Image (cartoon, rainbow, N blue to C red; front, top):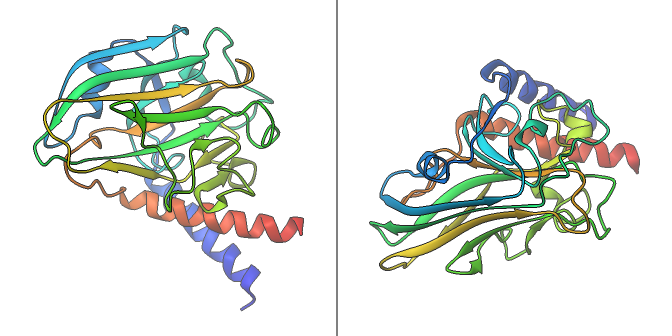
Length: 257
């Protein structure tokens, strides 16, 4: 069997599997910092002093039914504009709420093991047209002021210009090819951040921000219960989705070559 035929077959099987286990992505705006932080908390961590900062009335909230589109079912969504740009299908030329710009969820926490782990996916309407431009939306995970949202292999920050079809493409999913159930034009694979050896009370901030202008939304999906003191493994459906993303990229690259 030719490689292109094998890839197409595997992609179809992966799509069938994820579609059969997923429901439509749904979002609910929520500006209550304590409720959002509680939705993230998993085993072995205690969270306090939560605070949310955002210019948009619907820039933060929760989501569910996202296994097929994102790779895990539910959690917290923080955006540069509105959570309403997250649900699919991907049928708009550019979804945006320009009243927003930066959203930040902060809290203090303790870990019973001294370690933390959590899963997330960065997505944006800036893909693929504005890769390499000044419109380089960015997501940071600041632990005691230091960004730990770094790609595997110390491959840099999670931003439009650093994760796309040409840069760190193993961690990117092109929704123009995959037609996932989200309005965002592109998104990362499931990424995991971690820190070890922590002591006492620490401070954490999830920060997503526009760069260049406040048009075209970006968002970060953070898995519910994933902020824990032990490693969180992606749900089974996400394994197929990750494979589909990589297969789609390979197929797309050959067509463009």
